[in-house]
Amino acid sequence: MSSAINGSSSSTAVIVPAAGPGSQPLEVSYLDLVSEVSRYQAKLAALGIGRSAPVSIATVNSFEFIVAFLAASWQRAIAAPLNPAYKQDEFEFYIEDVKSAIVLVPKGAYAADAPAVRAARKFRSAIAESYWDAERGEVALDVKEFGGLENGPQPTLWPKPHDVALILHTR
Image (tube, rainbow, N blue to C red):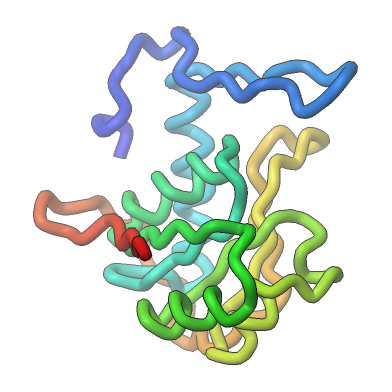
């Protein structure tokens, strides 16, 4: 929902520091942020993510985290950020507790059979890698397992004032 992001369309909305030597910081305008979040929201909807579906995000703080978080809330789903450094039993607790429809992990986590992947699989949550695809110029949503997603594509939704947009666990 573009009205949730206010700023001059050409002004910088997000700056992600350079990842390492020789790389450039990622600067994203308000216009591009709204566009990217809308595209990602459509990807979630196409997978069957709709109102109140918990979307666990087990990535580091990054542009793809921002996009996934906002897209989930715009889709009237519930963003559930998880610390990517959790151990498998911690992921299992949180994924089971919120009944995650999908667990978003960084690129390479699926092939590495990371703790978040093993935990998601245990509870039949869908698993997707979410990462910045510089070649395509977008945040990728690469589904590895569909888990229990059986609703089929959902319409693109608009958030309502009383929607639950976030579940944040603390210990």
